[in-house]
Image 1 (spheres, protein in one colour):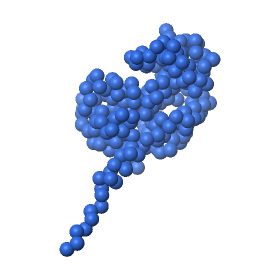
Image 2: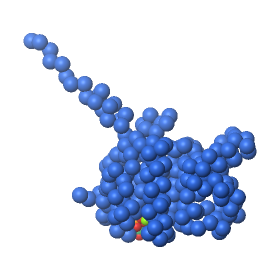
Image 3: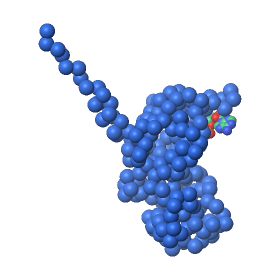
Length: 242
Ligand code: ADP
Ligand code: MG
């Protein structure tokens, strides 16, 4: 009998993985009796712009901390296909490996900017580069280039208190970009901004996404912010819903 040729599923699987930046399987995290993230499976594509929406308490920030390697999951896997990662499971890394992974792969943006008040805009942007072996001149040049990208080179020497909320978030975005990460995770990045400024920041996210090809995940409860993304996932009670 003629031998039938099996479809080559391995190749198909490899193809699917080529398109994924992050693949999450069975991810769970509880705080005591509170199940914040409950067995999530999903993927983030290379260079994708994704938003995650849901009410307060639905588990969005917990999911973001897990994706950023800032919290360890109770169960599940986070496979990363970012630069030099080839599918490493973030949930299995040691603290030291995780610190390096975070620095190289992830840019973080928060609602309240989290800038260091005693440092200038330029120094804040350069801050994540300190553990890398770079000269002060290289660090400055990289930080200035990132500030230029967000339209703030003319504010390089200003301290955070000398900047508006929108300008502070631009600095935070420049800082998130400085390590040329595979993806940026933003938790309610427009939560402290008025609607006009929110609009400007979202336009900036779109511009940077288009220019750099970095993948973007924005968590928000603002439908207009969510609508800027290529894909929207809705979260409720620690899971994605239809
Ligand atoms: P969201 O960002 O959607 O508002 P969170 O991920 O912050 O949701 O919270 C999800 C659930 O987990 C909530 O019930 C919250 O109270 C709880 N939670 C989050 N972080 C902690 C923590 N560090 N300790 C205890 N409970 C927490
Ligand atoms: Mg939150």
